[in-house]
Image (cartoon, rainbow, N blue to C red; front, side, top):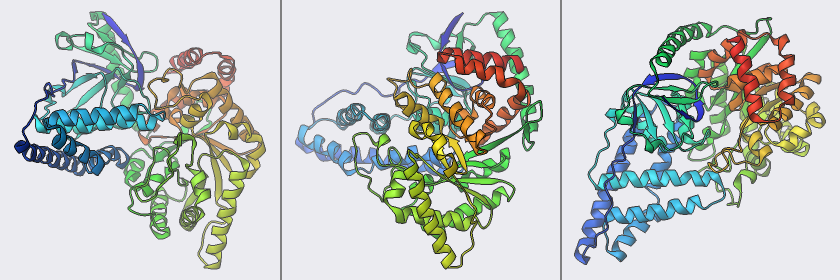
Length: 579
């Protein structure tokens, strides 16, 4: 038996055959063309371009409603690249000047662009190298007359060095059922990882030397991506296989139990009420809310509303959306609206943000709102108006100082005054909170706690900025870990301040939906979490097996742990003991 270790992205157990993706591009040979053949070659390229664009449009149309709108942005980005005049001109000019075949020209141009993106320091731009290669591969396949056929992956575990997001979407659209995913390339927050989580596919990343195995010759392999395992077993012996078959039967029963938890309140064994909210990106996800019945929305990412528009959405347009979501939730549930969080990798096609050396640390989120006050005030007025129809909270993103809170609140008061003067109703006592995602504000939590109604910890960015490790970088993936002792200590420190001052604190980052994260934060006294709606039943099951009063010992263990491994071991041991 061979055991391959990796990092789990989405938990599950699968017993099935594994198949490696076959790259279907034929060898790209270079050959010269005559002056008379140039126009023909350009027509070949333009025909291939049209075919790829049509395929993409068809894919986007057919996926609408099947996956989240945010996930389709990956394909829309590809479509925009296929319409980029600079990219297209590079190809046609090179065909004319160098008089070589279109396939080779595309190959050369794509390598140039991908190399350029990979050389940039910002990981968001480096991710674009994958998009360029993805688009280039589609164009070359169209020129070669090849149509990918992935039917051989149906009901298999997919093995690949790297997985392109558009491929996952295509399998999903074509009804090809991928049971599990194993990749060499890391990236918990990559587009592919996010898609795998959205579609609920057990996924293991950072598994080494995958192409050194002959996957065709193996029978069933076992993929176990649960927090306690995180491995792929090749040629498992009979006893191991029997054990896993029994595990699958128990997991099936567990899934039935999970369904029965939907709609029920989350309570610990000693009857402590825990609130499990949903992270959503807009109206399109109301269906998810109705399906999993969260206690509220802990994070409405309003940036998608702006990114989907051709111009800044008006106050009325925003009002209708916030009102609709709030009314769907009902008056007994809160809708937490995070104000505009654009910048870095979130760009608007109708608004130019100055180029910066390091946009992740530049003009983004609340910094943009405070610089462009009219945009911010329009949003605040829309939120306030919607607060007349439901329970709404306002949350400011990426706050770094008390000055920013005061400045934002000043604009909020101006918005309230304008609505009062216009005799438009709103909740004058609307709750206002901040994201804790920059270490400076976490350190200042005791200074600013009385200036806000609640804290919400964004664990992804807090980890990134605290550890100075880019969360999208493959190169420092071993440095970026949510379970670093410093991450847990700083969150505990903020929690103690919030609880001592009677303020609400919730977790809305990735850790808020992970069993280990929830357990750690429950031990810190945090009782509110926000996550992907589909994760709520599982977290609820964990909570009902925990005695909240007995967690004090765990908290002490976690805060005295010196390494990530020690923290994970303590959390895993605890979960194994109660589940």
